[in-house]
Each structure stands twice: as C-alpha cells, then as structure tokens.
Amino acid sequence: MWALKTAMEGKPVPGQIGSIISAIRPAVEIAKGKAGSPVENAVKANVMEQIKIINFSPAITQLVQENKLKIVGGYYDLDRGKVYLIS
Picture 1: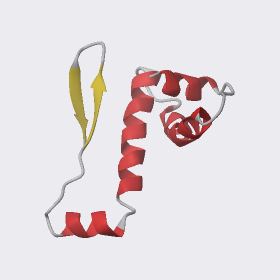
Picture 2 (picture 1 turned 90 degrees about the horizontal axis):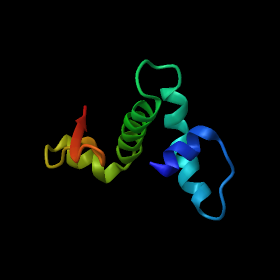
Picture 3 (picture 1 turned 30 degrees about the vertical axis):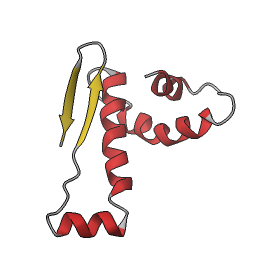
C-alpha cells in the first residue's frame, strides 16, 4: 500500500524502490478521476495492468489457449482480511 500511495503522490524515492513505483504509475494514471476510493481504484487498475503484462508471455498465452491455465486477478485487503477477485 505504501508503494501505491507513494506512486499516487509522485514523490521521489530512494534506490531500487523507484522501479516498483514506476511499475505502479500506469495504474495510478488509469485510476485518476474514477468515482470511489482512489487507492482502491489504483489497486484494481494495477492488478489488471499486471495481468496484461503476464499475458504478453508466449508460454502463458499458449497455456491459456489450451485451457491448461487461467489468469485471475485479485488483491488482499489487509484491513478486512479478505481476498477480492477482479475479472
């Protein structure tokens, strides 16, 4: 959650943490202006963006096409102690 909030604030970060923030920034941009919680929207957008990245793999694509693998997005809400699936 810290990395996401930092990405939303656009503050500089030390060392290699910047690569994590850079990976999250596209989701933050996608979530801007949507109704609801900005953090929750960015979390969901990040899950969907990571699914897109995973699906660029030819090996993953082949397994999905052969019905040997299904990619499902989700996130764990620490406050509620629940996993939420995103489709």
